[in-house]
Image (cartoon, rainbow, N blue to C red; front, side):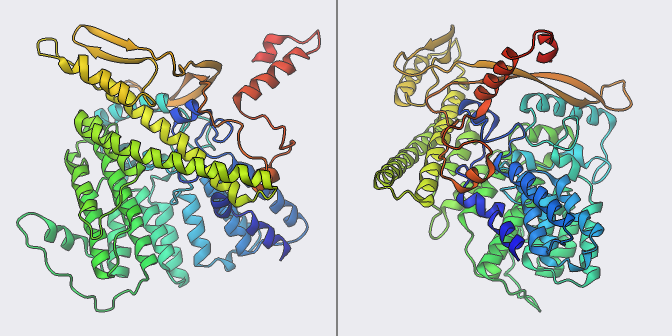
Length: 589
């Protein structure tokens, strides 16, 4: 009982809501460098809190097993959730297999299967770092399982994947392999998840709504959409996808929803969970139309409104699938039907605004629209959404200032609580990440400007400088843009200038299949590791009173130094203290 309470107190889902200030934020590789988040996020894009927590819990589990104690289901569930939060599906499989060696497989219930599927296939947003780019099903992973591509197409897709891997580094890759391999690559086979489905049915376990939604997302990872349609949506929920597609096509009148003979009664929470699972599975496979029809059908059938988060996920999946490099991959595979049309994002956005009541837009929704219109070259439409996002940024800043005043007042009164610290940390991270997003949009806006030398380019001499003045707080320094005769760089001496500092190199082993080679070979790629000193840095400023951080650190919390700067300093100190007979060049290697 004591160990169960310890595991429950260290549950990663609980810690994510109480001790992770960056919860709900997708930390990109550029954001990690610009805001100096190397002390918070590792090279794989995973919050460092969860791998440390997983290491401690696995050590505790081995210790109690050595004492003759068998872990119960609650403790196994906590370990599985921790493995998922750490982004380690291989560790989740090892925890699952450990139940065989300890002879506790008979205690597996529906919750155990649910947690294992979620951790093994990273079906939760927390497990994937809120990054949809790493959860896209690409045609190269479906080769020889769901479709058959020619050798020419395979080589071109491999070449594109090689280029993308060089640019993105280790983000979204498998930690258990020596070379760089996408996590989605390890989930491309449909056999493991389908065998789990047959095993659950064979044991006679009840397939709850949570388990069914986990199966939907996990099957979507391998592109098993027909299996989802036949075994889950139709047999369990009575959703007939061919009928939905026919009734929603042009020239076919939409039929009225027919009541099921044995309808599945779901609460609003269950209906929302099913909508999210459908959007995740079909959206990641490029079936945006089917996802929209299913969501609207579930909403009508169970008389539940479509939640804002569901609409936002559908909007973001539409943008991801219509933009490069995903659209390029499907075009190379000859499946243009997977690519949404150019006005699909605007259509989903108009559907959100036409709801009763209308969906309230936030910073995330504005960001999706800005990136979508900038990718198409619609600068004027993107500019209106940037202005809306700036208004939301001002509100975020006011909340940050208020939370900062509350934090200072609590320090002065000597009654500092974890709730006050959490609100302050969350608002601070949200403020700086929003600032970075606005700066990246302004940089992309200037980069997309292409004036023509044979036309009247008053916009190049008036509009762009006015844009830089209007968004001076977010414009890059120096701000470079094109003119009919070359480039112009405007430097603001009152604003800070971003300068990179080289801190080291990293060699990545990337699998690449050449044109004349039968199999892939590992190509070494050297990547530079840089830092950008900035007043917007989030490095080393985490409060020392957070319970999870204080528990998981071995050093004194009040004098803690983290990040690459500290690593370089420690390396220099060790190098300085080397004995006289030790070769320093060998030490550097």
